[in-house]
Amino acid sequence: MGLKCGIVGLPNVGKSTLFNCLSNAKAQAANFPFCTIEPNLGIITVPDERLNTLEKLVKPQKTVPTTVEIVDIAGLVKGASKGEGLGNQFLANIRETDAILHVLRCFDDPNVVHVDGQVNPVRDKETIDFELQLKDLETLEKRMQRIEKIAKVGADKDAKKTYEVYTALKQTLEKGQSARSAPLSEEDWKLAADLWLLTAKPVLYVCNVDEGSVVNGNKHVDAVRDAVKSENAEILVIAAAIEADIAQLDSYEDRTAFLADLGLQESGVSKLIKSAYRLLNLQTYFTAGEKEVRAWTIHEGDTAPKAAGVIHTDFEKGFIRAEVIHYDDYVKLGSELACKEAGKLSVEGKEYIVLDGDIMHFRFNV
Image (cartoon, rainbow, N blue to C red; front, side, top):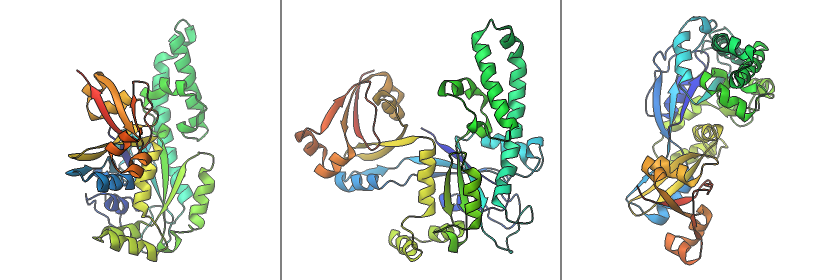
């Protein structure tokens, strides 16, 4: 299952520095706007201590973590929705992502220029929101023109309902709010899914701070928290400069010691990846054997056949049953055999809802 998150923000807020920390792909990080013109793509592993624990217990030939794609997208400026700067390219690139990691500059440094002259993360957020909302309004108005006559005649009930959903989205956007804030049900959203609205995508606000603010934040972070409190959005505080230093350290021990000196238990990059995972309601199950211990990504609420299909479509088509061991039982008892003997291995059918951390083995026939 592919997961692609786009890192967005105004020029010079720390997007490329953060991307470099996340990925082995090295985007240019420079003190001037538009240093990232083509979107840089990095494939990064999702940190999961459970995978490390299973590796120690099973001792497989190889261990394979699950991954996330991170795209560093060119900086946006006012007028992007009308093609200003790299606007058209920015909007096309963001449309292809599953979630948005919105980086906001929350540090003061006279040596790093700000595209608008002064640091104000709330204004920066509103600038990008406004451009995305304008583009979404344009998309909606075009689509509404196509179905308006059919919907108003009333003979086509589906068209009428779809038009009502579009109208609710349009009214939300015209209030200066993002589409994700619209009062729509899950069924309503299904009718709007093919619009691919930019502001309907889930968002994580990443506050890029100085080293002294990484633990407790600062006035800029407080302002962001206040500005997004009605959005039910997650906020993450990261010092991209610190993350860049951590990325240069070779050993796990050195990184752990570096974090401890700063009063941190986990790197910001690790938190960011996990937050992006949660943002899309994703979870992990494992397969474990002598040849391979592997993490697989699924959506929360997926059934056993759906989970099997992530490995191969034939597994889903020919699904017979799943043999399941819960992670805590596996760790406590130490092996698959011990779990079987203790009655902790269950045989589940097509209706089984996979739990985060399940260790699974599928039986299928095609």
